[in-house]
Length: 227
Ligand code: ATP
Ligand code: MN
Image (cartoon, rainbow, N blue to C red; front, side):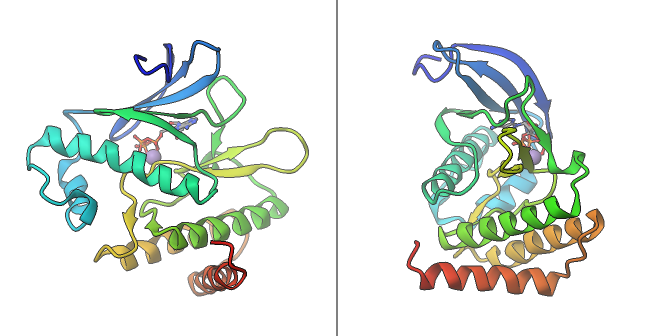
């Protein structure tokens, strides 16, 4: 608030495992999402697994407070990398201690639905699969693996302008650099989660098939010099 990134917190939209998310407004009335990480009840063991091995967080003091602050900074930095690569993520606006202010996704009061809570048509699923292939390939080329990619961390943003819904991926705190020793495992798990989602939702997609599509997209982007 002191930095002018938001003025008032309006109400809470989600109480998750590790954070509360609020709708806020800045002094011009623009909606913002404010994610406040819990300082006490977070899963410190899990957080440590993702932070250990990240060269950006070497020599981190081992107390819980430092871990939560690093976790917050990590989500902010990851969002910044992804948005600079023009990927479909909320634009990060600033952070301080355990708080991140970012672009609010969705036109409605409480934002938009998670992919998990929607019933997409096959046509929509095909568009979503393309969008997620773009996202996974683009993020990898930007140097990151999301590491918790699923229908739970994907929002469906429909501006009603007829272009069809746009997927926006959120929740980047556990995201890690592609050169992290566990990056490959997490990358494969992200692809597997997506393949499972599409198959469950009615668009049969195997892991191998989706993996190949992502690789092809990645090679295509490199060849066209888009990065
Ligand atoms: P969970 O444990 O449920 O995964 P989390 O603590 O990891 O939650 P997020 O996944 O980042 O937190 O966000 C939780 C919810 O808050 C999202 O499902 C979404 O409904 C809402 N949300 C988060 N960021 C935004 C945003 N930028 N715009 C709109 N809504 C958002
Ligand atoms: Mn989440």
